[in-house]
Length: 364
Image (cartoon, rainbow, N blue to C red; front, side, top):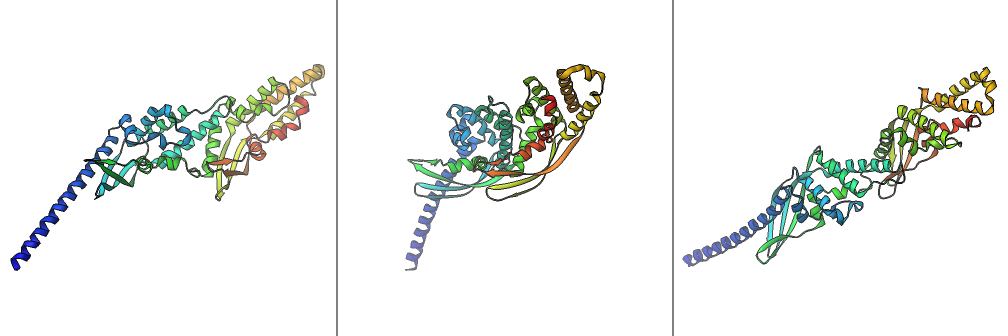
């Protein structure tokens, strides 16, 4: 009886070892299949990346375009410059398998923030002249340039990989969740309506203005329409004022308050002091009107001289003025949008529109 018990125990042990061996072999096969695909991503080959993940679906909607499939694959291949992984757990149940892996990939949140800021700045610049647009190709090139800079840290993420056995081969079941994780969840961050804070949005707008040429600034702020006069003088005044604002404009963000859809950013804006310009203009005109030249110039001559003096006062101005104001923003589900109003315009222009009203009769 004792020998029979030993025999049964031995049979059970052998069966258990056999089953464990089969299970272990399948787990190794599954692990090998996962490693084979993840290793391909490390090859830094855009064609391979395009085969491994659905690159087009991992970009914001405005960048999804089948005609740019190769460019998109080139972009996403850059995610894997420092890619690595470690398989932690493997479980197999009949023809289904589950793998938990820890991957190290580029910090897509930092990339998405930089891309959103840079894209917004380019959109602002493109809006200066209505005929210009920030194209899809330019957006892709911008994203690629950011990734090629190589200044991004890496992050560690845990991902679940599902596999299915087809005949004798284990194949990974493709999902958007897996593709997203393999790219650091770039799409999730890039489409987050609150990725950039209200004060970051304000900073991008003002930094874009500081980067404008005087001609761009003139068009953006409509500086050539402050005076209702002939086109030539409007252009001259707009150019002179644009150069002044380019020279003196600065800002400082003081504080931010916000809820889910509304925000207020308090800023201090420094710009040209147009009231000081008008004060200087009036003084010089008054002095000139007492000369014999003014008496002999006639009405048209005096008007031309007064225009000349105003342009000169704008060009030679060195005084600035600062004021605090609240900038209101609304989140429309895509991003925070600045609500432009007269208060912002007046601060940027040094209250030029109100100041020039007092002398419009002289130069208009």
